[in-house]
Amino acid sequence: MPKLDEIYNFAVEEGKREDPRDEEKIKEILEKRKEKYEEMEGKKKEHYDKDRLENPFDDSKVIYAGGREVEKIAVGIDIETQDLILIDRLNEKGEGIDAAFGDHPEGRALANLHNVMGLQVDTLEQAGIPVSQAEGIVRPRAEEVKKGVHASNHPRAPQTAELLDIPFMTLHTICDNHAYQFMKDHLKKEDPETLGDVVDTVLQIPEYEWSLDYDMGPEVFAGSKDNRAGKIEVLGFTGGTSLKEDLIEKMVESGIDTLVVMHAPKKQIEKAKEENINIISAGHMPSDSLGINLLLDKVQEEFDVEILELSGFKRVERD
Image 1: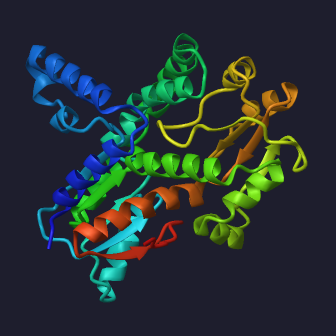
Image 2 (image 1 turned 30 degrees about the horizontal axis):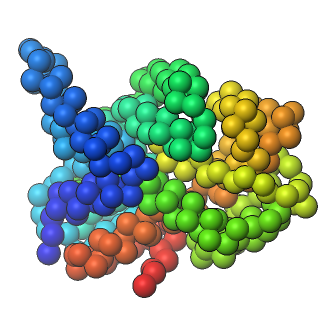
């Protein structure tokens, strides 16, 4: 049986394979980190997260390793203190859970969420937005996110996992990369004509059909179901978190008609309506479930582990 570190290292490599950036770009990022690390001195070097030298996804980390072998993993969208306590309670009832895996970052992974947002510069450039404009959209938002999460209680979940002795990792952008590539390929293959067709096309994916049971399925947030979809771009599926409304202006300039996202902020939707840009929100929880499932299919092929779903996650296996 594997230890959590082994599953984590495997997941990092799979995240790289699904990354929108090419292999050389990722190597360049890691090499620059190593150079900066070598130049560090004193306390900063002593406390530096050395995982960053091999893992380009700063929101994906082993939060508490534990050190024991893992056979059964509890998997959820959000694994927080209350979920870790639930896992401990389930173990008291004989569930036999060895570790926890969450999509959304906790601890140091949340503190560094802003660092993964540079990935969105690449996805925007690939969508036809000039790189200088993409930088101007992403960098200020990343700085805003950095300041926004700075005051959070980052030690809380890691300390809970350690006290309960539950090995715990979060794999945010690693999973999101999988969902992003899948959704892009799916929409390209199906080539929906109207916004209603886009919604129906997304609902072909089992995670999104399941989400209808909780009324959190795909919806048109800007535009009409009968509108022609035109040029469709999948954005905001990976790279940390949503961008602000200035993205919409750049979409107009780049000839993008329809934006498919996991979720969209209110001001972004309002701006899209002003500019006659269509927005379809695929749904946050089913999109995260999709990314987790695509990764878990690989994990279970490589390792003999059992999955217990909780905290908003729906397991769907693919051949």
